[in-house]
Image (tube, rainbow, N blue to C red; front, side):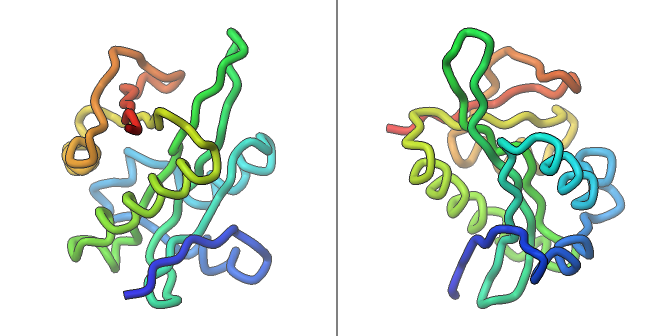
Length: 150
């Protein structure tokens, strides 16, 4: 299996916009259209397509954000696997690839993300990758999780 992460461009934007999660997950994450609009407004965001054997299976958006203290955080802000590809292991495969990408791109020691606590599938996946709740809430009242890179 060949895994790749590609920037969203004019060549793949329409396909990215066609991705969606299962109906039970729509309350937990924005649509890819909303994500791409947000990335146009906040240029720190890097939206990407997640590919397996050159087939689009998911989407993510990440970035490095400087806070008011002047220090920064690498954030995996959005992560989804299309409903048609869920339940076969792509979540684990793509999350591992994204962690490696963020470490490579930002030389970071921690990766942050936020999640609604009742999104048990996502919380369970993140915990398998050593993310843990750090007691913070983001601006949407999602709980913040962090992974320390050793």
